[in-house]
Image (tube, rainbow, N blue to C red; front, side, top):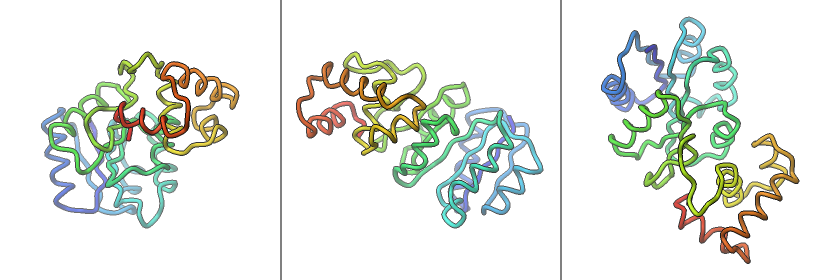
Length: 204
């Protein structure tokens, strides 16, 4: 496994590297402490797995990083965040990246997260870390389909119908149909009940 870890904080970078060594066999490991080194590494080497810490793009912005990731189309890529970030969620829904984790997750949770992404799953950890969201093999609760779960998640995160349609690459009418089906399945009568169900399903 050829791995690139981009993190500015030395201790966190070291901890992530040690964790990855416990999870998979490594052919070579490259670490970058800043955006310049990160981009330079992407241009010099080929990687199978890329970990990006939120601190890495705070100065340059996420889009500058994403443009460089396009040069490694076969690599699995995950972001580790301090807190939820809508733009990163959009990248996940658009399948630009393969996973979203959080720095506050415990070691066991992060280890499972890395293992599952390496095995081909697409995973976004919940902010509260209790369950993972939108793994390919995740069985939806309350009889919602996987697509309905995605539409539901975006609804409670404040996406408009148009925005959800653009991110999910479906028509606005399809988004409206999914929302109507969700309301029917969960017996949602008013807007506040979307949030209540979001808490029940541990999406908030």
